[in-house]
Image 1 (cartoon, rainbow, N blue to C red):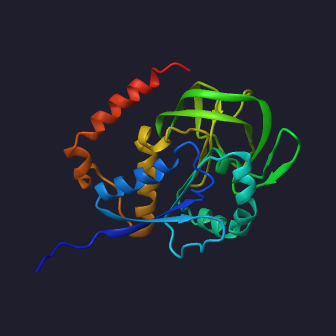
Image 2 (tube, rainbow, N blue to C red):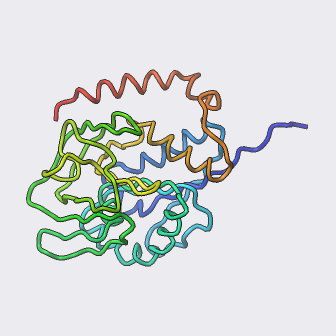
Image 3 (spheres, rainbow, N blue to C red):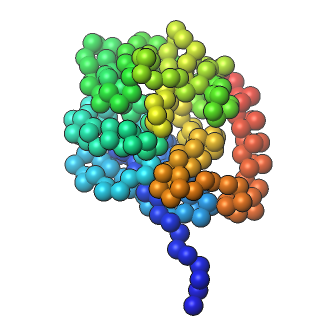
Length: 252
């Protein structure tokens, strides 16, 4: 009889992949799935689109970017599950929201025409549509995660309130807006960012923060390099470092 214990499940929920995935943000869910496997856990992947049943068990939540039309399509449904998302956030569930869902996790997104798309107010941010599109590679610095790399493509410009702190300080690129050096926002274990790419393949420290927070909450365990034989055996740490080095030198 085998004495090998079954992998411990970790439930990952991707919000609105049908409408909020135009820049390949589904890759963030794939990274979490693979890294959870490497760390010896069983990834249980859920997706949620308008009208779906919200999963009973959620350990990590991710969401991506979309056009204004996509935000319109999900707005009412998102407001309908707002209470569930607030409860998860206040219970310190780790979340990563990119671009369009980053905006809708705030108070509102006001389009260039002055129409407001209401958000769920989980993040103390407001976003305004502009005629200027902020496009290009971004290099930013975070005290917690080190250098954060990604690609921005947004005309909405976001401003932080007192209830959040910036995710990072921009060194190359624009970030949240054209007026301050901030990129993204952070509240408890919720991260919002404009960076695509997808973000997590280029920034494994953020991926491991999401995973590590989830397993610490659920199982009281800490991630360790020795618990990830897949990472070390494949030499992925070295490959990731090389890829990040190249990405950081790409022109704007």
